[in-house]
Length: 319
Ligand code: ADP
Ligand code: MG
Image (cartoon, rainbow, N blue to C red; front, side):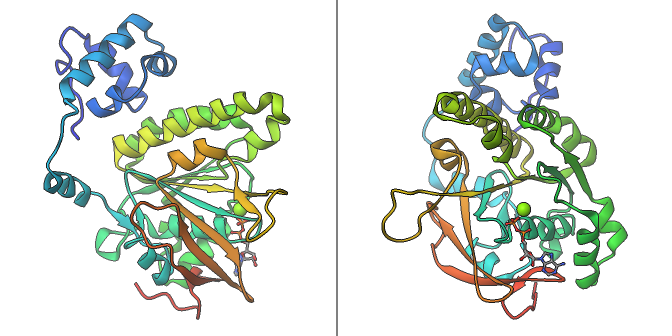
């Protein structure tokens, strides 16, 4: 994927290209796959212009068949960030992938935020230490993301805690529209700070508390969808890893097995490329499983939550 330059889209003014770039529509692919209505909403440009840039971008990228070896080569440019627990890295094929959305699902206290903390300490590390060599942007919707814990994890992994703290940028989102607003500003922030990971903890909570009752369900799903659409584009356009957390909700109709289901419905299920389900285990351990993945094994592994963040179940953290 290459970034667009003025002149790439025939007859489109460079100011229009600038408007697109400002909101993260920096590749032909991202413009082609964003509906014109959404382009208008994001950039403020007229709908005729939006339709035109979308059409030109689609024409240019030629969505024909591509040999699998070329696709494989493109996929190899994706990077992975280790998570802090080697067993979890293993089931993720090495770690959390850039360019896509990874969703952490689990009930209260299952360790979602602890994985986010650990990732935010490890992602800024250089690639030879299996980090992503860039800053981390955290959107905290619950007010639970505290610098003290970042410091503790860094110290317990023998990392420079001042460095660790400098590399994590935290924005508190007070409601769902504020959350969307922050996400729309991400392209600028990512570019300016060379960020390589975006964390939204928790993706759904504001939507759940603001849109109550069946009557508002369609509206809620539409807003979640639009927020996720933005995040997907950002993941692809900047090749950043996007990590979201999501809660579970008990389904009273389930008679056998686990009655808990991830919230956010189909919109969430379809937008997230990798879904990781966390359950409480003995003592400080947690059971982790990849669910609904097109190619990762759905094997269950056990991790622990310690002073060093998430680790293997015995508290060790080999690289
Ligand atoms: P959630 O899934 O709700 O985000 P958390 O990720 O906050 O849950 O996990 C909470 C768990 O992490 C608690 O059981 C707590 O005991 C454990 N925990 C939190 N901080 C520490 C720490 N500094 N050292 C060890 N365990 C911790
Ligand atoms: Mg949490």
